[in-house]
Every structure is written in structure tokens, then in C-alpha cells.
Length: 112
Image 1 (spheres, rainbow, N blue to C red):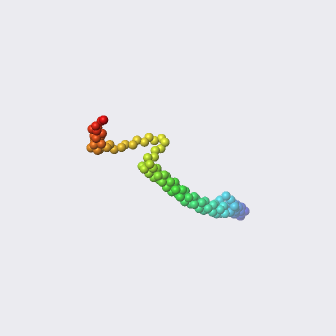
Image 2: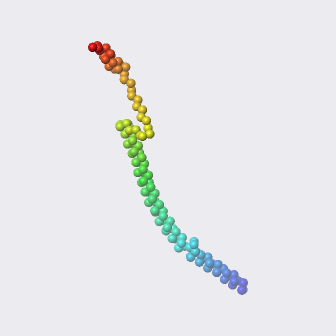
Image 3: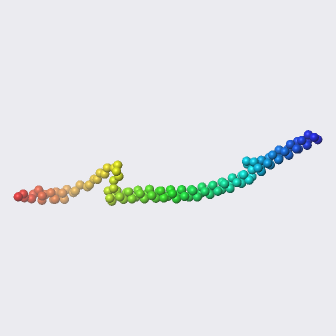
């Protein structure tokens, strides 16, 4: 009978230790609830930051494309050249009959 009481008493002490750990230890229910609240708050902050990052990425994309568009137009219409570039322009040759008729009167004109 004595042995049964010691076993029962030992089991009650072990149960009490488990309960103390459950209510007041590192993995206690209040601690878990506080961590869940912090997690929810952090997820909200992350969502706001993610939206802001998406807006900034869209702005950067618009600026890059916008500058490329402006640069392309300046190159085509104004002949813009960067500092480290060399511009080579190719012109179409004049047509042969127009060039010949323009030169002919100058060559056949009498000299005084």
C-alpha cells in the first residue's frame, strides 16, 4: 500500500511539473499567444512593405523605360551622342542624272 501511495504521489508531482511548464515555461500558452500576435503584426508590416516595394519597382521601371524613350527620341531627332560613342552618319548618294546635270553646266560654261 505504501508503494502505491509513493507512485501516486510521484505521478502527481510529475503532472504538476508538466502543468507549471505549460503555464509558465518557455512554451507556455501565454508565450505562444504573444508570439502569434507578434507574428500577425509582422505579417501586416511585411504586406505593407511588399506593396510599397511593388510601387517603387513600377516607378523605377517607368523611369527606365521613360528615359530610354527620351534617349531614343533625342538620338533620332537631335543626333544625340554619348561621351564614349562615335557617330557615323551614312548619307544616300545623289542620283546619277541629277548629279550629272548639276555638274554639266558648270563644266561647259565659257571661261572669260
